[in-house]
Length: 254
Image 1 (cartoon, rainbow, N blue to C red):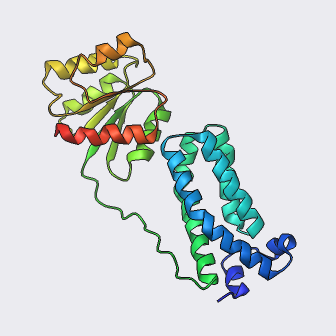
Image 2 (image 1 turned 180 degrees about the vertical axis):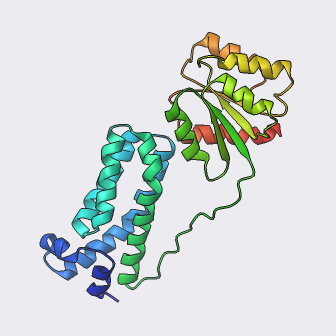
Image 3 (image 1 turned 45 degrees about the horizontal axis):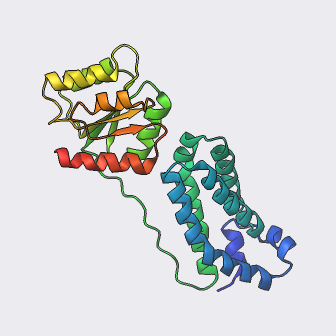
């Protein structure tokens, strides 16, 4: 194909790119190089997001920003820059909030470049919204943690949140059917251990699997938590992969 108008019509600033590359032959060769490396780069960006490794995430989105700027991918360069700045500030919530927008634009550019070079367009799988018939309860006095969990599980679960143990027990008390609960220990009003004791006294562990998420990793606290039939204890800061692993293991309790 190699019709430059196709690139321009799709928002690619070819004129800006040619200021660096000089002619279309050099530009086209660089587009080929971009296609040869971008898939692995996007996979690694996803990997570092999942484990909340903002240091390496920032390095890769910086690289994506540079490539995009040189090649005239104006919007992708802007989005990558925003992710670079926010990940350097360890703003994980921003990364999760805006990740889909970044990846969607990256895939759009990949498909445009692929078609321009006369190759078969890459089919990008899109998530299909389904009815979420499973509920998971996140109990934490930090809105940041509650929001982060909502971002992680929103595609699979209806995420309910509570900021202390009393709110959690109110939700449980009205008979809400839950796939599982992610429970912080150190909270105001009614703390996590009081919730665990309530579950023990009312035989709820067989009905609602509970995993502990806590900033207290002392041996005494961990051992005290494991005195109850919980799924696992994760200490903060945790990452997406660990949280998903624990929630997946809740299936064995049903």
